[in-house]
Structure formats: C-alpha cells, structure tokens
Length: 163
Ligand SMILES: [Zn+2]
Ligand SMILES: [Zn+2]
Ligand SMILES: [Zn+2]
Image (cartoon, rainbow, N blue to C red; front, side):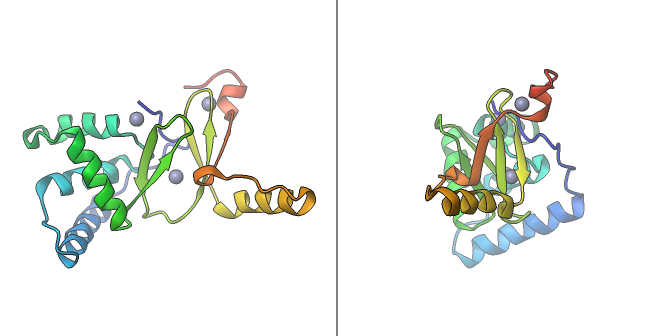
C-alpha cells in the first residue's frame, strides 16, 4: 500500500462530504449513469481519506465501512475511471506503475514524491512549472514533469526519522 500525504490533510467536514455525494449523484444522472451504492461508497472513501490513496487502501476502507456492498477490485477500477471521466478524481501514476488517487476538489497542484518512505507532498503547480521553465530557458532542456511530480527524499527521511 502507499503511504499517503506528508502533510496529513485535515478530514473534510460532514457537510462538504454530503454536498460532494449529492454532486456525484447529479453528475451521474446528467451523464445517464445509474446512481449506485458502490459508486457513492467509493467516492465517499476518497472524500473521507482526503488524501492520495491506492486501490488497496480503497478496498480495505470499503471492507471496513461498506462490507455489505461486497465491492470487488474490478468494480473499484471501473468506478475510478468513471469518477475521473466526471472530473471528480485524478490519478497519479508512478514510474513503477503503481497509482494513487485523490479528489480534484482542491484544484490542480504538483507533487513531491519521497523515494524512501513513499509519501507525497502537494506543492503549487506554479513552483514546478517555474523550475521547468528556468531549466528550459537556461539549458534548452525540457524537464519531464511526469504527472506533475518530482521524485526525491522528504525532509523527515533526510533527518532519519520518517514516520
Ligand atoms: Zn495505499
Ligand atoms: Zn520520506
Ligand atoms: Zn495531491
């Protein structure tokens, strides 16, 4: 499983979660998709996590909080594709092929990825683009900002006390 966010984002409040659940139902109906319990449950897991989480994390949260729905892995993948089509969720795919999913609710941003503990830190997209532009301008080299993410070692790992 992945390790989530270095910044440990605060959970969303119940009001926001309810508003987002209603927004999902509206978007599904508008696009002629059925509003199903598994679709609502999977989005709810992402809303409650309010972090960058992998499919294994989603499955364990579903088994804990929505066990009666018996949602399998292929349903999770299909539903994530649908949530991405609806622009509610975005995917961050790593060089090793693993992926994490997060809400689009917080707007576009970049990521710093720790190679050691695997955690993620959100950074303003403008900061990553500024690095890319400066190197492009000074060296004529186009930095490949794979999925808007820069790999490295986080501050805690550098100090040898990662959680
Ligand atoms: Zn995970
Ligand atoms: Zn780290
Ligand atoms: Zn993020």
